[in-house]
Amino acid sequence: MDLLLILNLIIALGIFNVWIIRFNQKTEFRGGTAKSLKEEFVAYGLPLWFMYIIGFIKISLSTLLIIGIWVPKVNLYSALAMTILMIGAIIMHLKIQDPIKKSVPACCVLILLIGVILNSI
Image 1 (tube, rainbow, N blue to C red):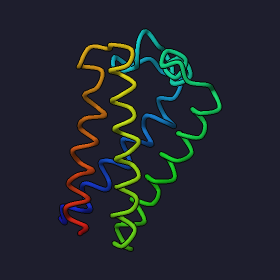
Image 2: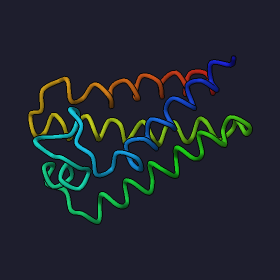
Image 3: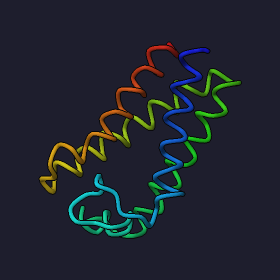
Image 4: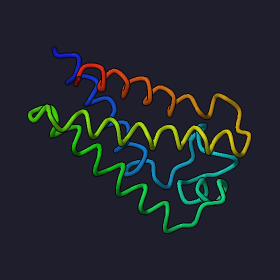
């Protein structure tokens, strides 16, 4: 199986999992003491409307990564944009002084995105 295919699927399905399936569920990786994505954005000091914009962008970029399996030109730009969002997620965890463990998912996705970028140039 193609490495780029695997990376795209892992990233996209992971983002879908967080933003659709586990949107209102508590996980050990939520920022602060948040039990949902809404509470997490509140913990970061961000407005609720911003959560919806970030969610729309992340789901859209994940969809583009799936499309990128068949249209490779989409991968580079989708991965670059998603990289910015993952760096933002890591910064938010640092901002509220979360333990490093809570940043692990964002760091892992960032590493996978770097793999997509390197395989797309």
